[in-house]
Image: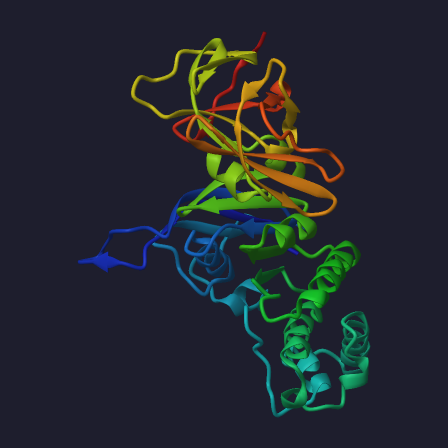
Length: 361
């Protein structure tokens, strides 16, 4: 197993006369602790797969170093780093049996036959491949082929880290939850360092102990699923995590008061003067907003209601901005004079996209 450190990593695919221009990854410093289960989360093009390939050795970064257990491995190949990697689409030998595919990484390293057999049968049992061990891989479904790819990474006991690059893309939706649970089980049993790349927040939040959110080549927040939901440090995290994402409203903030759409709101913290000309917003998740008819709340106009059974998502408009409210499915939506009240302990202030620390009032 390995502790992986990224030391000021930047990478550009576009180099002119030896100089990098646009960067896919920008000045990343991060440590992946030995035995951790991490998710690298973000939309397409944010740099997460580039980051994973830098860790594995498929890409040499333009700047910075990669260290495994304090050893500089920046110039080493994936084999020299002792890495296992699972890609988005299955990488297997179609003409060979499932058993042969699972055994190959071990046989290639000269592992004794009885240990190979023990390990192959254990992983096959965990991945529900036992009945297919004698079949040729080409006869199997794409789901089963991807399970073989997972098995080839998991079958090795000596691996430094296992890297997953959106491995469940080709998997049928009803199997995804089962396979995520299996990976979690194997992580607990064997204490692998696992890094799992995905654009799917559900996959990330159910797989990982720690989630790394990437945006525009940068790591904008690292935290537990609860921390990302409760306290987004960047507006992108608030938008990307949650369904629907965090409400963000332009605001003027002075001390412990915010002005939004002409309405004054008392904040639970006091804030310093914001930079003139900067973008100031308050953010609150739809789950932390109350909806009522009349009263002292801020008036909103209801646009539509999405009834999902257990909950309702009430789509409203506030000061020309969309504003979502999540309520229990059995609650009535006001027919008129709709107003919102905010859980002020869950309201955050952002300046130019970054959270601002306030002082408790």
